[in-house]
Amino acid sequence: MVRWLLHRLVQGVPALLARAGLVDRQKATEATDLAAPVMVTGGLRILLRLADFLMVGVALGDAAIAGLELGFQYYFVGFGLSLAVSSGTISVVSRLQGSDQSARANLAASSRCG
Image (cartoon, rainbow, N blue to C red; front, side):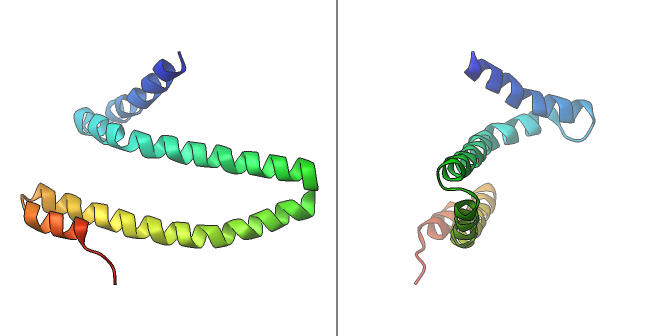
């Protein structure tokens, strides 16, 4: 039941955007299918952070929540950098693959830093 509801919700977004004349429905459906796992992961990450705050707040109080938030700031520096590198790599590989340059796309995907 929940899976069906989520599927309907995800499929409804491209339909609404197409109905508003903002995008082509086929392209929006394909893009949403690719983006759905990232959207679900982001939602779960938010729920996890909320659970962290609730547990720490109930058990230890306001000062502990402030400490948790301070720790998250350092976590998100590394998270942001890794997201930037992975997004850039995906972008480069996608463009190269789309322009039929598979050898260069493989090189970009397999290159190591340092």
